[in-house]
Image 1 (tube, rainbow, N blue to C red):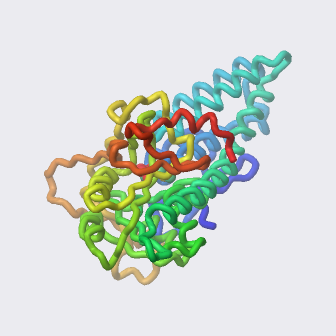
Image 2 (image 1 turned 120 degrees about the vertical axis):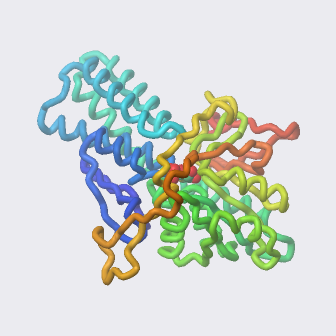
Length: 383
Ligand SMILES: CSC[C@H]1O[C@H](OP(=O)(O)O)[C@H](O)[C@@H]1O
């Protein structure tokens, strides 16, 4: 399985996703500063992956400090050290809730550990490291369950009568390159393919970072899943095409508000409007770590604004390059110099346009009154 994150006993490496799909290179993350910059620069991206890399970056830093016995000796001082580092890490990208959710949970864990009599700084550090390491396996299990639950729902509600397969469209990258493995929305595509329910997968290029053409296409080709890349502007024509027969759109999420409004990659809202117009099911796939009950609606979600250069330039290997390496990758300008640019990384899809929210504990649909009730998800035991 494709991996964006490699970690073993305090040694963290990430696949530099700015180089994909042309160059597969893992780079070391040795500190929280390395982690912050890798997330900010989107060398690693994807709501779950961001949280995991941030926590493991701090775990790696603590592991090195423990080996060098360079850590605060008292439990209280260690808690303060960890809290300061977590507060720094969460400033890297604001929209995805997974990072701040993980920071809050692990900070609570270490504060509780420090309350045990005779605790030392090293005891608190080990507690943090173990919890951070557990995130990798937990996320993978969640994704496999999301895949199963989403594929089951699509087979039941999006496959036309008399058919056994369905074509689906996905946006951005929500696969192994956005998580610890398998993926969320792309995990559902993987499960549909494994169940022989997938007729065809369509992926949008997802301008301007091109998560679709660079990352999702890379994953679908890697897995041998029948897939076609379209530009973002082709989505309406695709949904209007009886030949394509798209029956469902499945996307990921960066933050799902308590009422089901969802922040996701820019362009998601447009796809939800198209789905409603064409009578196509629209699903959001996300682990419960992406659901933020403290945020009441999409209006409260901060949307990250990214640099203009991501819109006005594009990177790739030179067409005359005999071999593809770092030297052959060039950036070219594709917009008129002097034009101003608006580059929000995400948009908000109102819950009214979402037919279901696929999680590791099941698919939530709106109640009879047309509202989502997501708090019940947290009473459910993790299956
Ligand atoms: C399972 S990834 C969720 C989410 O993250 C992506 O954003 P980015 O590539 O900017 O980190 C995209 O919105 C995915 O749907």
